[in-house]
Amino acid sequence: MKLSNLTKSRKGRVALAAIPVAAAASLLLGGVAQGAVPVSFAISGTPFKIAADRLDGTGFSQYAGQAVDADGRPHPAAIANIKDAKLHNLCQTMVQDTKLGKVGLKITAGTGKKPAEATDLQIGMTDLAGTATFTNIRIGVDASTVNTADKGHKGDFAMDSDAIDIDGLQQVSWSTQAAVFKLTDLKLQLTNGEECF
Image (cartoon, rainbow, N blue to C red; front, side, top):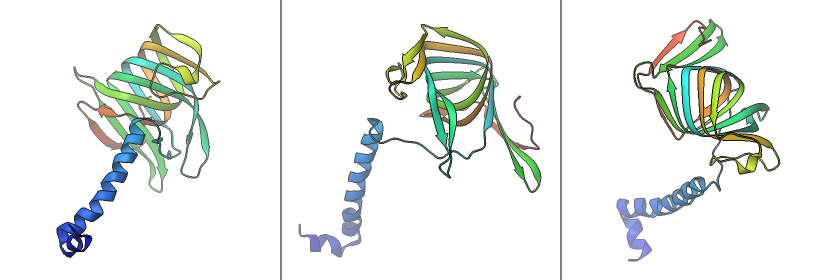
């Protein structure tokens, strides 16, 4: 079929436009899946709090890193990766100063019998508290050799473990991302600045 015949109809023009877009998308998504194309985002620069009665996770690593805001300013962070996580009685709060005063956003999930669940969870945090139990922990490993898919830089200090359980989790974070985050019994509400802890 000649190119001129394709461009005469609307369907032909759509097909011609869709082919390079589909090819580019396939290459990009393939690169993302193989780690060749980094996926990241600029943080807001406003830290937020996360609490849970209990976190149960498998496939854990932690190393030093940074979170970068939209102005390009780096913020030091401890980067934690968890392959699969279950969070019981999850609470997340963010408080922002506005012209109306302090306005907060509060999200709760996993408050019933079923916990919130995350896959390929990555957290950029500044503070963490709770009672932690690690299974098969390694402390002082090279960050480029940790047991998770996401890794740190060669020569940097890191730790990893087969499993991690934290009771009374409290953390302050710059960022959280996950491949899948299932928020069972999700509730979102605006507050006057109420926080998880």
